[in-house]
Image (cartoon, rainbow, N blue to C red; front, side, top):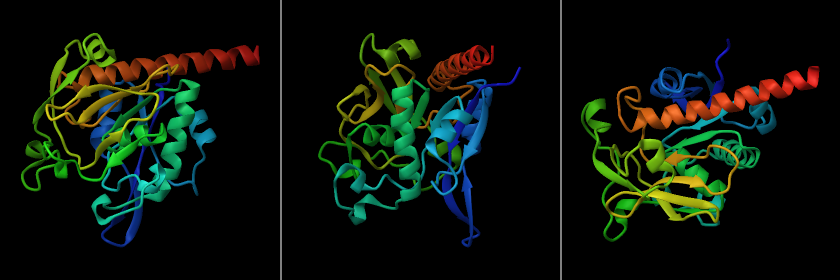
Length: 259
């Protein structure tokens, strides 16, 4: 039986500083395959190549990944500054519309890091350009040096609302996560629920209230060591179950239409 398909939102890169490519980290595909039990499909995040209706028809769920470029502040009504970093307007155009469409349709989405920020912006929220510059906030950025293991090491706790969605998914109200981001939520979209915070008050876990489907997003990177990490595994398992349910429902609808 064919596995459900998870579209992984890719990022644009220059390979060898001159050859343009679309790519996504292997650890995203590994988490989708080994933990969520789905087939990963990397999506070129550029409206020249894809449309939202086609993507929603081709895939059963979507993973909105991290990436170096940030959501352009014009998407939440602010002017760009040097502090906002690099941008990818093509990904903005695909990802934000796709998130809104999936939320309304009930099609499962999981946001990670930039994907977490995309969910907030798509739902009407805004972002701080640099968390570490805010009074009382910690530096949440990736360590500049060290091995991959050191960069993705668990660095702070996240506390969820008691009895909330993430508490139920994780089976724990307090977990330990990595942290590799510069930006963060300034104002939450009207329908967003901030369900988890870092010790310094930075929002770390969100979902869309009253959405008919799975809409969880996290500011950390659960794709790293997802099969072994006690926080990452239940998150990707829950996502995979939601994607499977969507796939089964889509197949059932197709059978009814052809009967």
